[in-house]
Every structure is written in C-alpha cells, then in structure tokens.
Image 1: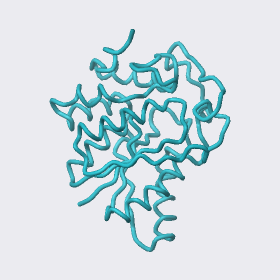
Image 2 (image 1 turned 180 degrees about the horizontal axis):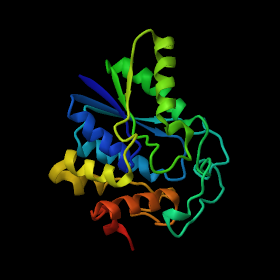
Image 3 (image 1 turned 45 degrees about the horizontal axis):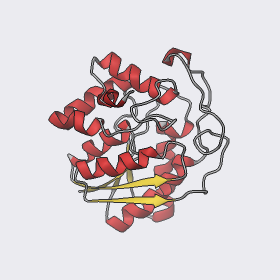
Image 4 (image 1 turned 90 degrees about the vertical axis):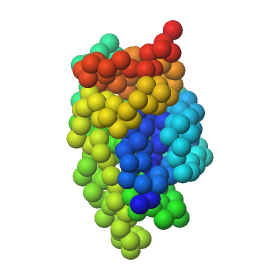
Length: 224
C-alpha cells in the first residue's frame, strides 16, 4: 500500500508519518505558504529524511492563502500564560480554507504517486478553534474528492479524537527508540522559535500534552 502524508513539520504530522510507514510505502508533501513559522518547513525536511520516506516534495504556494491570521500577516501572535486561558470560538491563527486547499493538492499528488490514502494530523479534541480540523470536514472532503475524481481516496486522521497527551503516548509506541530523535526535530511554535516560545496556543497545548503524558519533550533541549 502507498500512502501520502501531509507533513507540516509539527509533532502531529510526524506521528502520522510514523503511523503511515507501518502500513506501507509513504510519500510526503509539505506546503510553504509563507507562514510566519516557516522553520517548520526545515523540520519537515529533517523528519522526512530521518524516517527515510519514499519521497518528499515541498510545494511553494506563497501568496496564495491570504488572511488576518498572524500566520500569514503581520498581526502579532497572541500570548497566553497557560492553555487554560485559550478562548473558545474560531482561533485567531485560523487561516480560512487552508486545509481544504492542502487536501485538494494532496489528492492531486496522491493520484500522481499511486497513493490511495492521505494521512493528515488534524485533531478536534484539544482545541476546537479550527473548523477544518473536524472529522465532519474530513468526511465531507472525502465525498467531494470522490465526486471530482471518480476514485476514492481515504483521508486517515489517526489523532482526530485523541488528546495531546494520548498523541504523545501513541508517538512513543509507534516511534519506539527513535521517539526522542524524531520528535526532537519537530516544530510546533507559531512564532517559529526553535524549542518553542511556550506562550502561543500551539506551544501551550504541546507543553500540556507532554506534561499530562509524563514524558519529557525532546525540543526543550533547544530552549535558551
């Protein structure tokens, strides 16, 4: 079986890549969309190499996605003291149609590579501020892709209903003795800080996940 993983360079996508490898040949694509935290593209390159993926393409789509999100604009990333402070509603970092665009391009590449399954590290459990991270969106996208392509492409989301701590424990299971090496390469921080700023929403959710799992986060070695 051939798989395609959308590899952002973050922890969740790295876990998905490791899971995909268990079922067969795995290819990866990474999107350089001009994101503030473009250091994650470097992480994706390192992860793909470390996992010895069959192929890895970085797709340059800078300037395509526009929004007021600090990830694609000059607006500042909001800072918090703890994950408990994160507000309800749509996240300020949400980039409209980003995942829809990613999955559309991924379907194109999947067909070109002969892959029947796309892995995506989306999750609706810990923080619901991203409507395009819900399973209902994934299910609808699978239907749209079938109507557009007349062939079925499965979108696997193994982390969809897991908490961040459960994802960390799953990573330890699937990565084994390579857990620290692989997870140490990942980038989560919206500010693009190596080792994390530990004040943005992404960092705080990651920090809480590792803490609740009782596991040391390998990226802390980069913290100054």
